[in-house]
Amino acid sequence: MDEIVPIIKEQLKTDGEVRFTPKGISMMPLLRSGVDVVTLGKATFPLKKYDIALYQRDTGEYVLHRVIKVKDGTYTMRGDNQALAEPGIREDQIIGVVTKFTHQGKTYTPDNFNYKVYERMRVYGARPHMKYLKTRRYLGKIKRKVLKQG
Image (cartoon, rainbow, N blue to C red; front, side):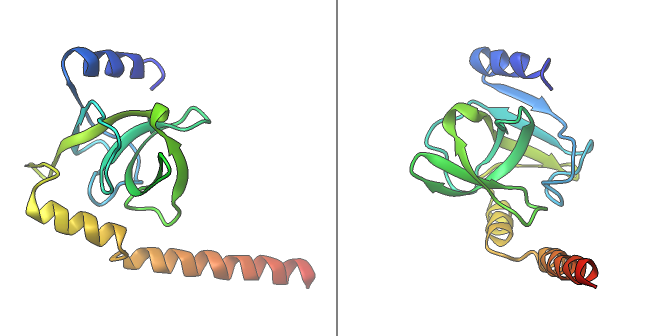
């Protein structure tokens, strides 16, 4: 990604958009790794809740996640397939915002009604597998504590 991001930034300045196929599972089921295609556009600030942004973490990693909270000029981000949120993302870390994406052969934009229903469900907790993962993580912590003491 380190080699590609300067090209993406330049393309966003000149052409206004870049298409690519994301890798990873953090945005599943919306974006499937190596299958679905996103179109990235130049970010206009402030970003809005539910926007999906490509940003660079302070560690250098590049991530494509959804804005779930905007506060004091920073953003809290989370992948649709993740339980933990990532607060404190600054505007200078944002590279671009998803303006449309293709999923299962159909193209969606942020103003598509079905997509709006989906994004709100993902942000507000219609994620039953996440409750399972949180419970499993909690029980694992208890198990580790018990095994260390026993």
